[in-house]
Length: 423
Image (cartoon, rainbow, N blue to C red):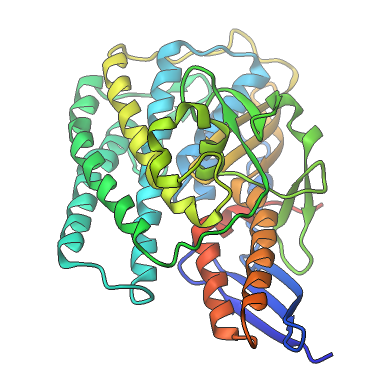
């Protein structure tokens, strides 16, 4: 059997990753496909051991230059769970605002990058839209970025998030005044989503898989709720590892995470909209239907989430007038374990910690990209086989372009996938 092999590094994503494809051109059949994140191990789960618990969120935020806020919040909440520490509503509301601002920042960064990555592969972007895009980034800088800087001292890596709340905070009135431009930003994002939908790169596909996200009955939340699988099974955060099992990838420092140790699943914006579809009726026209089984619509789902979150910001602006206070434990347990799961921009993020007194002694982090890698691989297999069946002969360049495009839609963060430590 004459087998063609192609190896390609994926451009336009965070970190190096290659896809290896082997096909049989005579039968137009996919023989094998592997994805291999190539970032070196970063050992954060070891770096954080024996650190003071209050310093963990600050260091954990360095795992990712885009999702730093998610790592800080999730690590702080896991330590609070170990200490059985209840934080007041004002702290929870402000954390939700911070998570939303960080997610909006990440989504817009990805969408704008995607547009310019795809530029030249489809019809040209109009001059008028380019002007709107420049204005969108200016408004984002003066609202989202500035609010994060005001709240936590940095738009990427928060400096004041600790177990129990915050070490310091600015005036809430000053923070809320920076968010007055969210209505203008919402209109510009609307135009961005419409432009993305006009690209003929967004194929119509029906790739069925499992969808996993936090589900909150009262609000489209990022920090609270149960873990929902396909809106059918709801599990507690403490039972996460009973359902989701990590496996190593041969030839790569990264891991895969599988449902029941066998099946791939999707996390992220599209998964969140699918799981919470009953709350999102007003946005269905962009996604055609919910739940949606088309992975090419992940960027559209991110745009829809941005509009949804900008509406929530308006509600939170009215709620957040009290200054949150820092809560400290009355005593530190001798030995305790805690778990936390939140929605990072790219999907579900899980932390499990062990704390002795006030020091971290064990840590396990399962990131969104680790959870999406198996699903990315399965969807690539599906798309490549579909392409081969529709071709008279194998067109390697077209297969390569389609693989790149699909991976870019998933928005993987490869450094986030390879910080684990093998023992």
